[in-house]
Image (cartoon, rainbow, N blue to C red; front, top):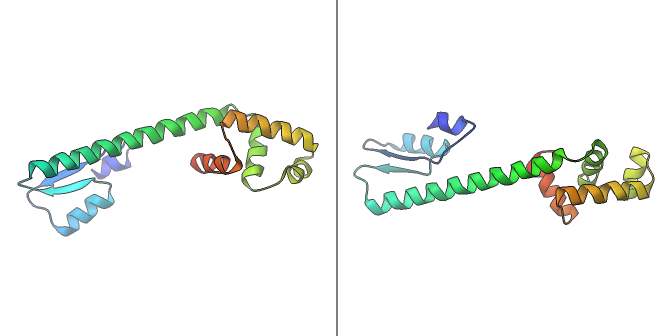
Length: 136
């Protein structure tokens, strides 16, 4: 289970054992187990644990898909648009960005508009959220 958690393709895990102690359960949960069940397992407990695992796995795949789409959009930005994005996320105003990168403010607005459209960002707050996900 720990190896699965560290892999590039983690899976949701439900552990079932006849011999579970507190330390083992804590270690399993810290490593990402959805649940730790002791034998004999009640059918309802197993079904609930499996459903939670499936939901967790589905959410993880959806998040990975969304992150991949954001990375794809980011890869389509020009170097200048990436530079502008970094400065916008840092909270700089168009005038400050223009002075820092030695461009006219109108040119900064143009690059900023292109970058916002390419990233599908509806606001600066949305752009900051996207930058956080991409870790840029």
